[in-house]
Image (cartoon, rainbow, N blue to C red):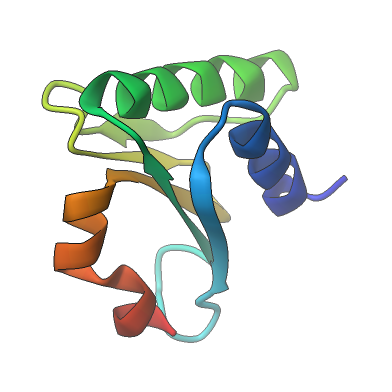
Length: 102
């Protein structure tokens, strides 16, 4: 199973919504794929990030870092070839990363 499929499946299992993997190969110098998803609240966003990190580590996937867990409005999890953006709906609407990277 590819890293992207693993992450998308885990986020779906954890009840993330609007999960969208974006191929940014050639557009970004730091990753090949960005995976966007939405959590229902700051608690849900934080929980999604923590559980995704745990699941990745259990599967032997390197987690290079995470940012934003303090406010949990937008948490970024760096998995190397994929960067996961877990956002609350209002942040996702405001920043519109889909339009920026599509």
